[in-house]
Image (cartoon, rainbow, N blue to C red; front, side, top):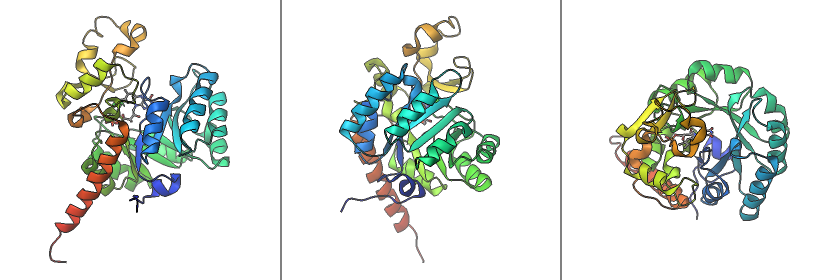
Length: 300
Ligand SMILES: Cc1cc2nc3c(=O)[nH]c(=O)nc-3n(C[C@H](O)[C@H](O)[C@H](O)COP(=O)(O)O)c2cc1C
């Protein structure tokens, strides 16, 4: 019998494992989303990857030709994007999981709920968590310090249980999680799922260029720097890739592909491999960790 992991998230979304393949700008496209979904997790696309609705439609069609498993998207509900058209397309293609990072989630809640979907908001603090709850989201993604992309200041160890107890909504942990043991720790803290970003950059299916993937494998956590100088919000980067940025801020618009975001979980990225293997190994290690922890209890 295939092993599944039952959590509030897996029951809500109908996936085997509480593992979300992060929506990553210029990295997560149909290949990665399909690989994660096929492996039993939930793959997610960042909608800013698509310049036109037609591009998004082609990608959703390609994914649907390969799998009918649940997928998610990160939608930017801001003036910068044609999000209404993007939302309608996603709903047509049966997307059930929406992550909001910028903008007001209330703009999409009714449509998503009417189609049986869920909206989770990326948050980095209690203040943001409470605001998101007030606005009616279904759950929170606790984006902790050390995460790839935009990151919070509190560690996963602290932020997840803090949001869980003070906000009371389902919490998904993001930041520094790429192994089964880390996943077990996040679940022990009260998370109902985890988001894996940085580790999946160094996979066959990511659209990162080969030197970026290799740099992730070669890096250690001390090679990651957090700065708000590039996007205006604190985000983590491979330090080598941004060393000239201070001198030449125009790099931001001209050479976006050469600014490499990554989080501290570069520590656990030891090779470039298929994303499905990363997910399968996480699941196996998670189950072994739970067993080991159970066996270590004496005197009951
Ligand atoms: C290269 C890169 C690009 C990212 N782009 C996005 C994005 O476009 N939208 C988004 O919601 N999160 C984005 N993220 C953040 C991830 O969704 C996730 O929160 C984070 O990667 C989890 O932490 P980890 O990198 O330690 O696994 C990005 C992360 C990385 C590494």
